[in-house]
Length: 142
Length: 222
Image (cartoon, each protein chain N blue to C red):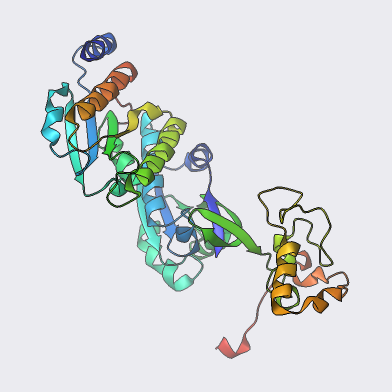
């Protein structure tokens, strides 16, 4: 996966280091430092629960210069606040549609369900997003 | 409450395109409850517009404000300084709010950001249903508290039509048959005899068909 990201990044222009804002539930990702090895510029926003993934936060992150925004929440059925992850998924889906309509490409927004302590899954999520963003190029509205 | 839904972002973008300074004005009452124009929706709309225009290489300054109610002048007055700083107002209130703001601030275009849809209730989270047409002559007492004007697809006053199946309207299985509900409620009250009454055609002059309506309360005029 890392290799394909590197290829895609070089295809879009050398020196493009995707900036990714990660909103994560503290239960889904306990240690965000595992994302440091992704090779991307990662901005981390810790949330008490996926429910705190507000729509405007996703857009404000893009406005602030993020090339992509990722929400990492617990798998369905494992939210300790019952439905925080489900609501987060619906909000991200709605904003993906809006971002598509704006013309920025909804692939810049993603949500992944991460089991508590599964750092590898979190890394994979970031690498997949970096791969998508690398093919899209920098955020034109940044 | 008045139920509204946001216009598509492409339509809003077209509407606001001529202006380089825009106030997105929300309303903290009905449209907030139906997620069309409260504080959160104002913030999201402002952000979306900034992103959309910046992506196209155009510069637009978008300011955000939400007042308690756009249909009352005393709340709109609070928006005056913000309105003065901008070239247009994108109102996320219902049609009443848009017109109220437009009548208050006569030198600035006030643009609609939502489509006002109906007067309704929140049936369950995320589902809003129409419950009143504002016909001007309420007859809910004769129909067990169920309005056949707003809830029967055919607006039958002398129902049921006979087309419903399993309590659902023949027009759409998503619609509960209003007359089935009326009958069930009258059964529960032990007042089935009320269904024998014939209802003559209504006088619609008290509804929107009679032209713009006014309500005068002399006792509140000074």
